[in-house]
Image 1 (cartoon, rainbow, N blue to C red):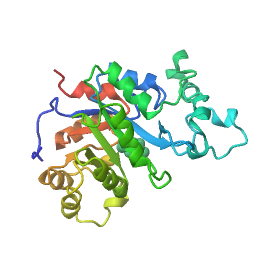
Image 2 (image 1 turned 90 degrees about the vertical axis):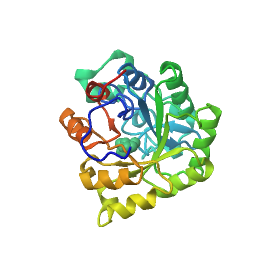
Image 3 (image 1 turned 180 degrees about the vertical axis):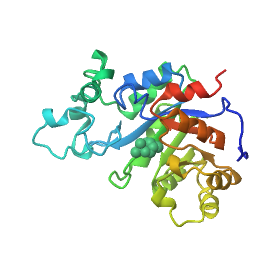
Length: 277
Ligand code: G3P
Ligand code: CA
C-alpha cells in the first residue's frame, strides 16, 4: 500500500472470483467456486442471504427466482423470498439449470441439479479444494432484512476455523453491518463497498479518512476509480478492490492506476494479467 501512481502488475493484486467463476458457470454453486480455484483465483466471493430457519446461504438475490427453479417447484409462493423458505426447502432446488437455459453456448450437464450452498459448505469446499491457499471474501447482503446476520456470520467463521485467516475479507454496502462485524470480531478485515450514489457530493479524502476507522479497504464500483480516489484511499492505508471488472482492457486500466485487486466474473482474464509465483 501507499502507492497511488503507476506500478507494475504484480502478484500482490488480489484476483477475487465474483460469485465464483460466474462467467463460466452458475453463480454461487460449488462447481463455479471450483472453476475459480482451478483458474487460480486468490479469493472466492460469496454473497450471503439468510433462510427462514436462520441458516446463511450463498446467494446474490433476496429472492430465489432468478438463480433457481423455485417458480416451478413452489409455484404458489411468489415472490420466492429467501427469508420465507427453510434451508430444507431451498436444498430441494436446482441452482444450475437456469444457467444452461440463459447461456446455451456455455451449458454443461454438470450444472444440472447443483444445490444452493450454505456458507459453511462453501467455506469447507474452498478450504478443501484451495489447499489453504485460496481466500474467502463474503458480503452481508440486505443486512436490514436479516436481523442477527452478523452474529451468525462470525459464528460460522469460528466454527470453520477461518476467523483468524490472513486471507479473509468481509464486505458490505452497509456501514452499520460492517460496524457490527467490527464489534464482534475487531481484527477482521472489512471492505466498505460503494456505489456512485454513495460517494456523490462527498469529499473523498474526508470520506476515506472517516471509514479508515473501521475498514481495511474500499470496494468501489469500477467507474469510481480515478486518481483522486486512489490517492485518498491509499493515503489512509485502505486497499482498493473495484467491482465488477470483466473486460480485460478495464482490468489493464485499473491495474495501471494501482488497484490492490478486483472482483471479476472472468477469473482467468485477470489471472492472465497478474504475475503468479
Ligand atoms: O461485492 C462487490 C460486488 O459484488 C457488489 O455488487 O451486486 O455483485 O454483490 P454485487
Ligand atoms: Ca457481492
